[in-house]
Image (cartoon, rainbow, N blue to C red):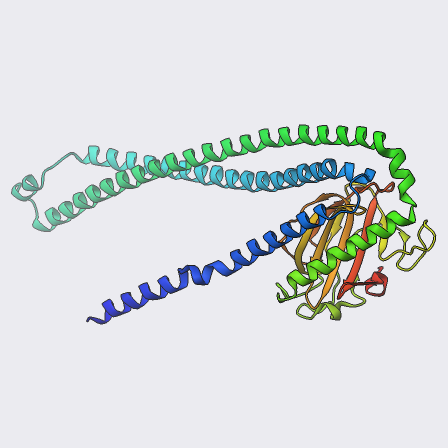
Length: 391
């Protein structure tokens, strides 16, 4: 078999192996499996709630709806930005192509005019008119050059026109896509306004019950136990997994980019700027209860940042904590972000330190707008301030 044929067969074999499902599937399958297991866990938690009558549960659908609408609006904003960039590039390319076509048309016009001035002398007439053979040869070469240039100019012009037609179609499609996104954005904004209006009505209806329960020690204990149970079950689900990305803290200069989460002690930034009104270990309003994390009072809608790289392992509404997001940082370390208005990330998403993952809110029946933040190792909460830089 010729060497070239052998090389071609080896190339085909390499491509087939590289693109085979056994090499491409695991990442997608792992993500699907993780999401499926977390979804099953959410259903299990919902079905095992010891009390279905707590007022905070009435907020679940409403606050989930607000979070989903806000997340879709954020996704649409990113998609629109990308579509506008693509449309501008297409328009810029089309303009350059139009300029090129105009230049080609001008050059072709000059070429045709030159041929007209020189006349259409046939090659046979040039050979038989008894002129100097050298001059005749030069004329024949010149006319041949003009003919080739003419043909090439026409070919380039046709190719340019065809490419311009393609770019025009693509620009029209992208403009239509952008218009559809704008229509969806308008619909989502109306949906969000409707959700918020319903949420306000709901809060007015159950505010008395929520206020009564806020300092109720039994409720706070149940909320803490619920979160601990969730963390324990998540730990069992993700325990066979390795860290999904090198851990780093991009918000703090000098943090080791490839180290484990433990190496970031003292270098973590707090997830949101605000007033620290609840500190780890300090007493809560209910007698005998203490904070297991930090409560940072902040304006609704402020960006919540991931404190380090990791993977989202929970993103949903949980009684007592509202819209809560949990990130796995590897080595049995988790960070928790609760009471958000919006969760921008979903289970399976990988993060870098400093990524925006949520927006501050007061979901879960919290009277104050702010973020509830915890750090846990092997399921046990520990003081985040011992790991954070407050600069």
